[in-house]
Amino acid sequence: MQNYITHLETLCIHAGKEKNEHGALVTPLCQSSTFIFDNAEQGAARFAGEEKGYIYTRLGNPTTRELELKIAALEGMQDAAATATGMGAVAASTMAFLQQGDHLIASKAIYGCSFALFNHMFARYGIEVSFVDMTDHAAIAAARKANTKMLFVETPINPNLVVVDLSFIGQFCQQHGLISVVDNTFMTPLLQQPAKFGIDIIIHSATKYLNGHGDVVAGLIVSDSETVNTIKMTTLKDMGATISPHDAWLITRGLKTLSVRIERHCQNAQKVAEFLESHPAIDKVFYPGLASHSGHKFIGSQMKAAGGVIAFELKANLEDSRFFINQCKLFSLAVSLGDAESLIQHPASMTHSPYTAEEREMAGISDGLIRVSVGLEHADDLIADLEQALTKMKQQQ
Ligand SMILES: *Cc1c(COP(=O)(O)O)cnc(C)c1O
Image (cartoon, rainbow, N blue to C red):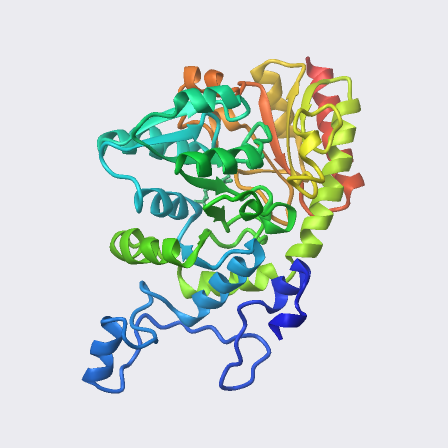
């Protein structure tokens, strides 16, 4: 069957799926913490890795396995590990390879908790981190030291949508023997496959587009078999951020509709971004789908489309920006992204509050920045909602 599958849309539905004993169309949920051995010899053989088969859900589970094989196929890589949260994926994939005395080069603007992990936790374990502007190739080269082991980026960057050149990152890391890690949450493999650029490890917050329905927190790590096995046998097995089989089952369900959802997210976001750019109360719009955006040139080469997240700044102070957010009715005031529902949030006081004010300034996250995740509602209704909130803000200014 695998031979007939040549498109990602088909892989979303069929990859990783195995025939089950009842012939059920949907793979039954295997909600079991442990697995019975036929005899003591079999138990010993499974623990010794001499016989394939399940032992205990922290070490692996058939429902989780379907999800892992699906995302590996979608990213065009050999294997994957599912984790309890996106942060579980960030921590397990980095800490499996970094140790005291190692140096990490990380993007200066990244997801707030990834920043907190690298900036605060890693310091406690003697891992050095340099936060670098990943669009400045000379700065990346200058940051590399004898003990540099890994490079970690996101693209487009959360929350300011700056696009990082993955072909440069992949080549730079290969040339210098660094492990490259890309957080592909904002794009999903349908819009961007970092493996094509030689990236070693791809991580996802599956909480976002991959699940897509706002009812799960989970993560995924995708890489070659050896790397995934190392992560599974160290940071995942012994630190334990493994996924619940029920959550894995829900994400597998969500993935079946990923291609149609992503298409609509992108179409809606393009319309909303164009509306925002044309509105006199808006100062700047950050969306790679706009010709005015610095990342626009990567569309078609690195990324198929611009995704569903937009950031913008109002011609207003912080107080008026908050007033605007409070007037939105269809856009729910909530962090997260990639859900059917449109969401709006204020990075400086919410998702990126692990940064201090100076760190935010260094990372290019202004106090006036607003981030929206454009959902699957009708674009005209979303635009009408933003328009009425902008009008109310102008009236009270
Ligand atoms: C949400 C998010 C994370 C963290 O994922 P959780 O599932 O919330 O732990 C990491 N990276 C990016 C880009 C995210 O948007």
